[in-house]
Length: 204
Length: 219
Image (cartoon, rainbow over the protein chains, first blue to last red):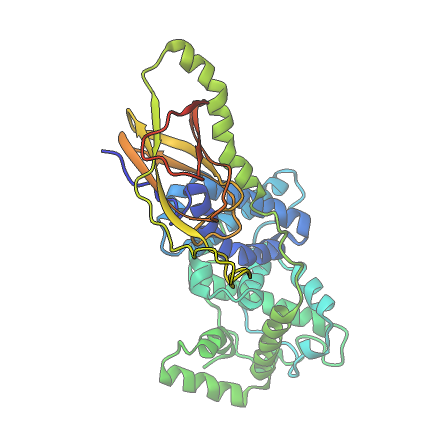
């Protein structure tokens, strides 16, 4: 029986695995940095991701598009860490389940243009975790709502609510103290309770 | 349309995912509502500012852990090999090494009227086949090739050492090596096959092809 050893094509499974994941390393690194906030923790997260991918290399190598698999596992590993922090009593809830999703009644003028990047970052970092992650994945890293929905395993409507509440909170934080302030035009907005949006979050 | 719906629609509007009527309705709302218009401008700013912000580059050794992990089973296999040998299992590697064919490129005859070196170094193309006979299917076999100076694998210039893992099936497993050899190549091609702590090594001179099978060195 025997076989032809494919020396030229892939140089073995180890090389094939590296060829498979390497094109995604930069995006995984950026996402890990966003999620973990600092390079040391981000590197730890990506290393864990790659080791897990290596253990499931037969599954990964069989995928036409390994990127979504890698992003989903990276997100789960982040949530695992976040929850372990919560187990120590230092974490808030992943989201604010009782918070209604209301129209942003903020400033009638744009407020981000006058803010520094650091001020914007600080406003995002102060958000509840689910809103923070939604903004970072969608607005900073460019994942579509459908991609994030598959990665986080939550409905697109839930993500829209998180994004909206997070963005409104960022605007409010940056407008705070300015001449416009926040809520100055609340009466001009029609409030429509969004009953279709599930606010709680239980990522896998 | 109310403000909340308009603000929720912004991402779909930007992505072109709203149908024509809904898109028109959302645009019309934005034109008449300064709050939602300011919200939309800020969301656009948020995206552009975040996307443009510099990020620390990825460390160059992110795959180091995987490379170490990929070698771990081999170390474990080496540790387990003693017990295997003591038990006298039937797993045997019978590697053989032989020339399958030889193709020699034309080598210009030296002439006293042309003392200068040729513009391009002459190389001899030769295909070598390494045949590894396995008495049963073998997973995770480690293969290593080391080329002597003056020899290279076609398409892989400058590389003299190759290592990789692969699986062998029962029977003869053939590895074809298209080599490019300098006319004055010296030294030997070294090949090593290792599985669960058992190994075979070969050293074959590339200076003069040998049509017969070569006796492997014990690894």
